[in-house]
Image (cartoon, rainbow, N blue to C red; front, side, top):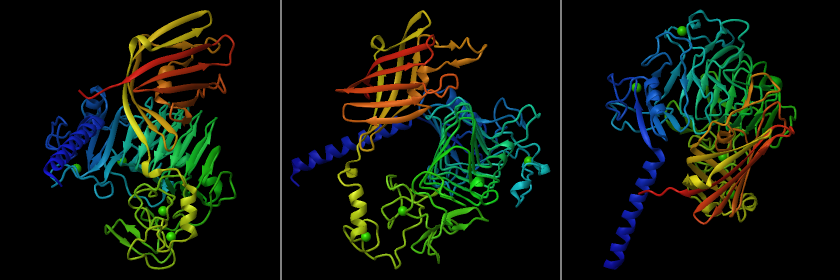
Amino acid sequence: MSGQMYRFYVRLLIAVSVLTLLTSTSAIGKVIHVDDDANAPGDGKSWVTAYRYLQDALANAKAADKPVEVWVAQGLYKPDQGGGISLGDRGAIFHLINGVRVRGGYAGWGMSDPNARDVALYPTILSGDLLGNDLQTSDTWHLLNEPNRVENSYHIVTGSGAGTTAILDGFTISQGNFTPVSDRDPSGGGGMYNNSGSPRVIGCFFTKNAARDMGGVYNKNQSNPVLINCVFSKNWAGQGGAIANYRGSNPLIINCTFARNSAGVYASGNSKANLTNCIVWGNGTFDEPSQIRGDAIVNYCCIQGWTGLGGTGNMGQDPLFVDPNGEDYHLKSQAGRWDRNHGSWVLDDLTSACIDAGDPNSLIGDEPFPNGGRINMGAYGGTEEASKSYFGGLACETIVAGDINGDCKVDFRDLAIMAMRWLEDRTAHRIVTTTYRLVEDKSSVVSYGGRRIEKHAIAGTFDLTVDFTAAKAMFERVDVTSDQTMSFIDYRKEGEPIYTDELDRMFHMTQLVSTDVNDTEARFVFHKNIPSFPGADIHVTVAFEGDSVSIAGKFSDPVADGCWHDLNAVAVPVRDP
Ligand SMILES: [Ca+2]
Ligand SMILES: [Ca+2]
Ligand SMILES: [Ca+2]
Ligand SMILES: [Ca+2]
């Protein structure tokens, strides 16, 4: 390399490093540290001065400019601990917040690398056992009435009122116990309770939560959370042992494992659970209705007692969990399976049919080689702990070019995988995230209601992520406000507000039905999902115009004298100074 070329190369490297640093810092935003071993009182600014209680960190995060990440070290955290909360308050609850990602699994204070993160190695537990006196019961059916659980939290965590930018990532949620105060108050969600809330829950382990009525996790009133890579084990409830969905709640459940709960997934009251790449096995009385009951969209899932229930790619073969008694739901494999007790790969004497049986269009993610060129079902599918693909012999010593599934041969099986993705150009998987600011004099919502016409200016910022390869798009970190609260009362039903948040819905996509992306625009469709206006949808189109975007949205309800809105906005990229 010539001197000049070398200097150019070094400058380029520095430029790239600075850019990486800038992007990573701005992407995370403020970080607040929490460790139950910390010296109180902390301020959360570093591991040395970490908060001891998660509630104090959440209060700080709520008041802070977003985005915020709350990093929580291994340890035990209870909802009744923290400033302004009474010890022993069964109603105390961890609230998820828009623009705040709460992440467990950090090594934390006093460790050689406190930032090291490993959810299995550094378990971070949100517990509802306020007195710490719960007896271990091997029988899930006794959870609710075990006498030492009468003082446990009603619910441990809630995403009520929050949207998809409220994220819970890498926690164990255990020992919530919803015993209603009276028979007039039937509800549930010992572990998690969402009332009109649609948070994202990633890599969490829900275990030994109970509810007399609905669900270890309970979603109601248009709650549409997204659950990815979660395990639900040994939860108990009157309906929907693991998850119950009610009144227009449509959770998206991807690569989750449900096992040994009093029942699996339940939906009623205009609700529908959408499951992809999940394993629902060993719940209730081991038949199909014990696994999934009510309306559901089920694809590429393993369901015990499966009778041919709709969808594509479903099956009913034993998933061969490693140790269901010990709640280890990794899948057995003769080619290699992650042994969580020893932190190493071991060989089993059988191989699960759930390996390489997920949706062929799902990304393989971090699955180690040989991964079969296809994602596994269950909570570890797409992760570093995914069980390896077995092809009837020892894994090859060297990786052969063209051997896509990893069976040491280059043959038609590889060609089939390649053909499925032919010309998809996943090597250049094009995902772009841009932060935009609305141009105030060009951004407004016009609302028409009865004989009224009102125009409201809107302002603020949002991130738009566009995945051109997968033809999907998403608004994130939305902080957009109107100069007037848009609140309409449906006078046909006394006093009950029917919708108050069109703006919020348009951007937060709490009822997103579909996205469609090409090089010139991204189109979104959301369900209104309001019982009095069945079938009313919101359509939003984002047009890419050079650097900027223009946004046009329209919602009209089918009732002749109702209200409708037109959103018209222009947004320009926010540049780092
Ligand atoms: Ca700790
Ligand atoms: Ca207790
Ligand atoms: Ca695989
Ligand atoms: Ca091959």
